[in-house]
Length: 466
Image 1: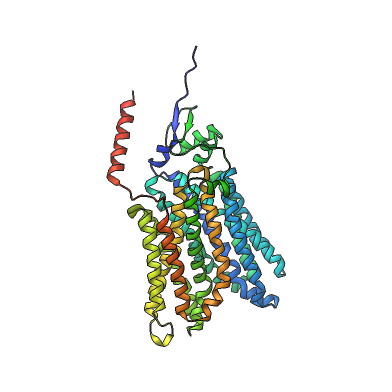
Image 2: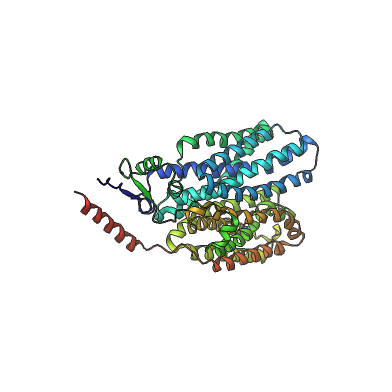
């Protein structure tokens, strides 16, 4: 007597065309918190540097190796986090990431010398780097297609939002409680979040199905997404290729995605180098031009605000224009802003402050905004089996741009503002060219076609109902 076959559940239409439920929005909330705390802990040392140097009686130059090694560790963490996410899962890599950088930030408060502080910051940076590729993978794999770019943009924008939060926090805590309390407060958030991730965030459903892992857990997640399924079923993902192969740099480059991986690596490098030059050196540029310390610091706030707007705005543009036109428009806008600032006198007596402020806001929108949209794009062009690695490995190469910014900065500052913004214009022009060469892009959506397909699917489901 033949045994009845199990019903087959295809998760692709459930995830790609289904509703954006409160359960999926909760996942977005928690993984965006990981990125926010990543942004907080990445800036605690920079904000505390003067206070620590004064307490220990050393110059700021003593901390240069700490900052440089931290950038390198963050790049290595990004690569390792992508590979780990594709091997052990996105959720547990995120839990380990948040717990690591939170705990090491707290431990940094016990430091009494540069060496101990440096070791703590390097290990914390490994954890911070590992978060990014797994956040993008989780959001890409849990958000419906029509909202995916927006969700990814919100997740990426949580990073600069964390920079704003830590600036406000530092302004209150550092004068009253000192730098050690500042580090403890900044580190407690991600540690508590890591504990909350365990019960509150599921493993990626696509990852579990692609590896044939824990089918009962998969069915439970599907029910939480609002789709009734049988108690026992066979699961498949028609939108992805199931594989047990481990992803490495060699297999990624040897695959059909190898060319796009290289293009993304160059784009990440030029954009991250440009972002870190602005974040690290633009206050010094305006201070040397004759502006007050307050105005020099305000330039950074204006640029950061533009980055926050650009990250969310880029996701919104993805859903209207598609990815190709969005990334090319934003990178071209960055070149135009740099050329404007090259031609604008930076001296206070030139009375060009309104032009400078407007250009800085738009530059923030376009440079960090382009960086965020590249992450959004990368998270959607790679299949589940290599998604975290496909984001993490190019981004890791891109983070070497942050390391290079520490050495390029003094050279571009040695000239005028024209040299500084001219160099940025060249970097963003290279980004524009490389992104134009990218083969895979997210097409502009066709709402009418999508609506017709949805109506047809609903009609067929009603027809199958007894």
